[in-house]
Amino acid sequence: MSKTTFSGPVASTNGFVLPTYTVATAPSAAGQTGVIIYVSNGLAGAPTVAVSDGTNWKSSAGTTIAAA
Image (cartoon, rainbow, N blue to C red; front, side, top):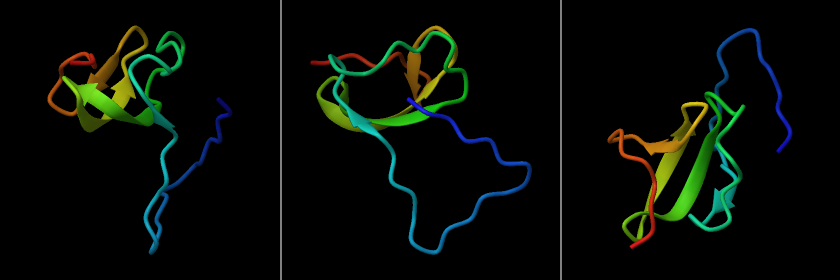
């Protein structure tokens, strides 16, 4: 997964498209601290946005992503 670093705020009038994965295809969260992905089945089968804490992918609720 490539990374781009910005020095100021990032804004869009058209939204942002996040890389999409399933729990099974999500890349390792190690070394990805702060990276955001979309996981189509990450909340016990429901879709979620997930953020890497450097160890695990976490939903906005703070739970580690997992399939049903």
